[in-house]
Image (cartoon, rainbow over all chains, first blue to last red; front, top):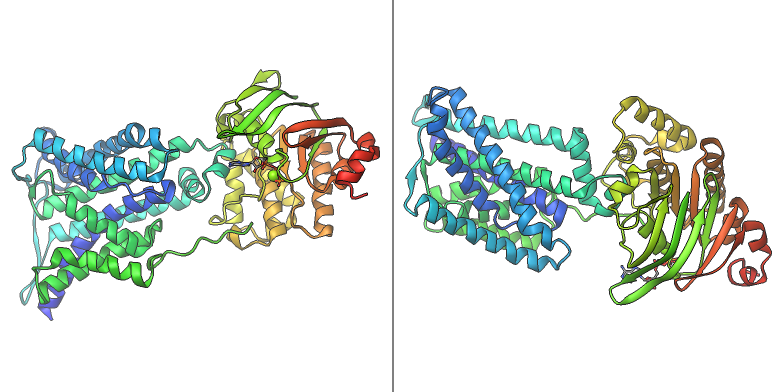
Length: 301
Length: 235
Ligand SMILES: Nc1ncnc2c1ncn2[C@@H]1O[C@H](COP(=O)(O)OP(=O)(O)OP(=O)(O)O)[C@@H](O)[C@H]1O
Ligand SMILES: [Mg+2]
């Protein structure tokens, strides 16, 4: 039982990180109907932003500390938000009226570009991520261990999910995002500058990926330029599982994939852990291609 | 208020508008009639910036607007109720209306416009919180018109507002259009298949046939025109 709870906690932490990445895939898909395959690399760049920012922030705030850790998190999110906007502006926007396949191939190109530029600039060898947060062991109940880092993963994820929910449901730009995702032409007729809404969506998704990168690095402190590939693919599967384009679906999908992968590798075999997400993908595509929370779009004409 | 000169629009290699010219005087209702595929929707979409013209000029309040992006055109006071309504089916009625007021900064004005729309279409008020995709076709049309009014336009374009509506509702919608024109001094360009009613409420009209204007004049005389009668008035 303790063993199971432990696996569950680990799975939830991993799943929370996947959920944050999955949201970026699903938001961009919702607006542009395209999978931004470079999104996993933005997650990687989030971790590296934190790596290079930490010493700078340490000059201003004590590190490790809660305040310092939050500063690293927010600064990395801001850097990646800007990066997401730049990627969209220069790589994807010129292709917006081309066939979707052109954009997909470009996204793969951007992904490879970021990975290899990362290897060139940061070096290919894994780097150890500095400790930015103080770690407290919180519970040791008969072998169950929950530390403050995992709690921070849950707290930050929950906070970001609530913030995102607020932006999307209760702000003007969020309503515009939903309108553009339903019908960009009609949104333009309302006076919405769709370019700005698209940039904003990339900024939001990339900031969440950066947060995921920091949370990941805090828990698994070895980072390298290819670290975004697998979590990126798994988060993509999570977004499809939840119903691509659906925000709560992406969060739910992330949690399900994270927990399933952790439980299977804990109880059955860890050899196949990376294959689990793809097994799930095949299963959904066969059983419910629109995903768990995805619905066929209703449209009355 | 609006002048179009020799407007040409193509879809790829296929021409849809072959140099049309028309003008709409401030405060008037002008109707554009024509059969399926004549280019009526293309004309409205080009005015509102959804399509870029290949040649020709569009002047609005004396300034050229051809080729501007749609959001710039809305800013100048033009509002377009598109064919097929294009309401945001995933948003509530209220959110749809708020989207219509997207460019208004002053919340007091937004509330005032909202009251006006609810007074014009009380049905929308009753269904304020409902997801717009679940409205009936008629309610969706009211919402599409209401949403277009939320931006406080000076110039309103309506693309077949009567399409698919029961006769009684068509009557209501047309009455509202006339009311808005009179009370708010809103200039209206109305595209209709329902030529009879459109010519009844409009001041002047244009007949569009395969991308060319073939007739125009004041609505009363168009209704008497034998060609219009046989082609569009069913007799
Ligand atoms: N996206 C498009 N791509 C190619 N051709 C188009 C496109 N939209 C319209 N057309 C063509 O342009 C011509 C004019 O179409 P338009 O929609 O303007 O007609 P309409 O007068 O509004 O017709 P209706 O009364 O049926 O709505 C038609 O021949 C149509 O097939
Ligand atoms: Mg049409």
